[in-house]
Length: 147
Image (tube, rainbow, N blue to C red; front, top):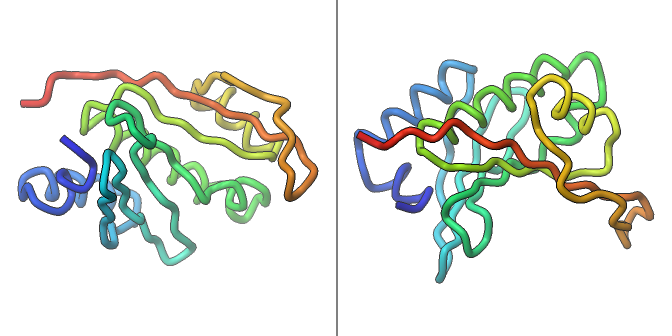
């Protein structure tokens, strides 16, 4: 089952995701489904939003993106924690095996590794736009059979 099917078409699954999102003060806005295995939802909060997508071409992993700016300042760090907690909970509820994040911020990398158990799978890749090094992190999730 693809992410957009969870959210858009199957009512009990939509209810589960909405409940998880609402527990952190978020809501889910819209979904996208591409021509192949490519789907995503936007998760919204009054402080900002982030994108939750299936790993392109692979429906066993999710990517949480557009979150780096929320890890930079103490005034947003609680919001960043909520983003990560909701992302992990939603991923586990849908039985995805992996959750990926990437960025250039050492602050975000430290938080994700030390506090949330992410592992760095690749680092030192030069970002041609910013001139900074990118890294890629993964969190292995507790996968249970969907009932």
